Image (tube, rainbow, N blue to C red; front, side):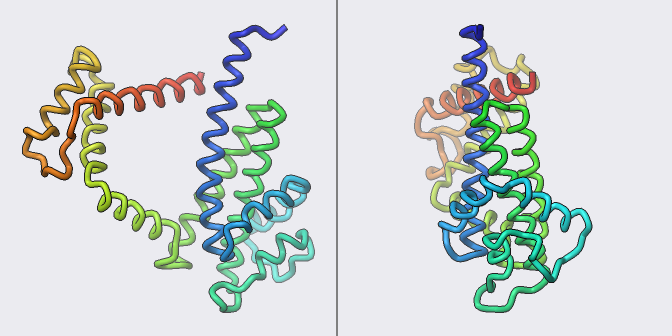
Length: 242
């Protein structure tokens, strides 16, 4: 019979995997919308992929491994073939764009497999499929720079990060506090505890410091909360590794 501790561990693991999947899903949905012009395309694709994911993975992964660009999509189901053949910004689809789309669809299909495995309680398989989805999404993001230019994934991410900093200059301060926190984790003797750390950060980056007014920490609760969030994330990652 399963103990309460085992049930709690499974619930935490399921929650952790779910967070990973939701994060990747948000990225995939955005790129599906960018490539195919409709945010519903990702959801529609997943509904089909859940049913025949193994066949879809085999067809797409074979092309990836063989480094070949197929002129025929007869080996793929119709819903996937239509996405590969869809025009890009009103222009005929080039071989490079088709190649990138294959990798994006492959990432999404492994993502669907990860969801299926997690729902079945097979967390080891869910993590393995999620890892494959992340890897292929990484291939897509890296290769997209040379094909899509200003419309590439990294360009959009950089623009988004710059916009976030412009909207909230305190993000720059938070990043600096994180650097102090990481040094403290490597050398615990730097601070006696969380409160000492928070007070020092408020001294360095608070209203009375030399930091620009719009970048300054306005209350000591901010570094306290950041510490709690970072510590929890680190503990969760360590427990998963064990």
